[in-house]
Each structure stands twice: as C-alpha cells, then as structure tokens.
Image (cartoon, rainbow, N blue to C red; front, side, top):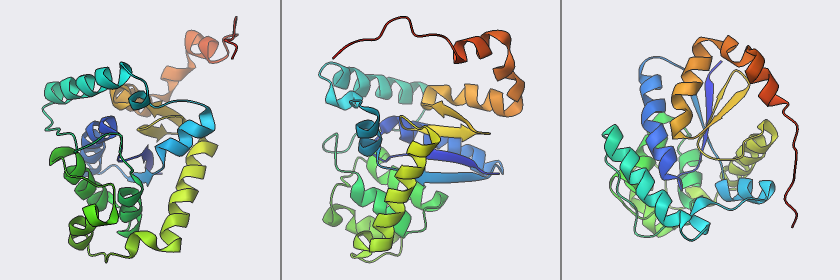
Length: 208
C-alpha cells in the first residue's frame, strides 16, 4: 500500500516535508500525494492556523526559515502569506496529482517565491504542466479536491503535512523520523506507555 501524504501548498512546512517524501519516492517507496484544503480542516476542527495568530505568525515564518537552512533546503516566501491556495491545489489535481505536478508547484511557490493565488498567477505553471487556463475551473477538479478534504477529515487529519503510515497519522515535518521508525517497526506504538497515553484521561477542559 502506498503511503498517503496529506498536504496543502499554503504550508511552508509541507514544502520542507516534501523534500523527504520525494526522497522516499526516489528510493522506490510508493507515495500517494493527497492535496487538501487546510482551511477547511481548521474550520472542521475548530482551530486557527499559525499564520492567523499574531506573534505566532512571525515565529512560524522564522522557524521554518531556520529549519530550511538547517536542512539545506532553499526556501523563499511568496509575495504574501497566507494566500489563497485553491488555484494551486486545483492545478495539481488537473495535472494528475502525481509527484511531478506536486514538485513543480512547490518549487514555484516555495523555492522561487512566486505567487500562486489566482488563475493569472499560475498560468505559466499551468502551461508548463500541459494544462489550459480553464483547467482549475473544471467541476471534476473541484469535486476531487472536495473529496480529498473530506477523506482527510474522515481519516482524522487535523493539520498539514500529515503522513499516514499503516493507519497511523504523523503530523508535521519534524515527525518524519518518528513516522519512518514506526514504518520500520510498528511495535514501537505497542509499548505499555504508548498504549497508556493513547487513552489518558482528560482532567480539565477549557471553557468558552
């Protein structure tokens, strides 16, 4: 079974994690990229994105730039963030949703720092991927993105990027080593303490 990778192009952490996912693909691991609408996931879970919280927004941008430097990955922010990711997500699906399309779009947004928040902005990229200007407006493309997002919610996804390994979800670029360790040895999740924290009682809940 391929490893399912849930992502949204709006996330710079997804771009960083993509470098690791692409390396897995290059090593012969079957990967299924699943583009989803992060904002819809946040709405469904009653959460705010990090870029929607003053202070956390600035920290997040600095943190991801630091991570990129540490990992030797070129990262350049697009002209504005957050931005509308729907055109890029739909273009990805219109172009087949495979590794090549995902790679090309991430490179445009997060390596070269190009805008991707409108049909006009992504028009050159669409042509490079063999798509016409109307590709992102096709009903089947919109339906596919909606279905992907609903699938992610049904699977329990609460953030991006998320890698699904054998039914377990691993959220974030920094969880990659954990995911790979569990893929190599699923028994890591079967220790007494791992089982205990999975059902740990909630002692207090915030109101409001």
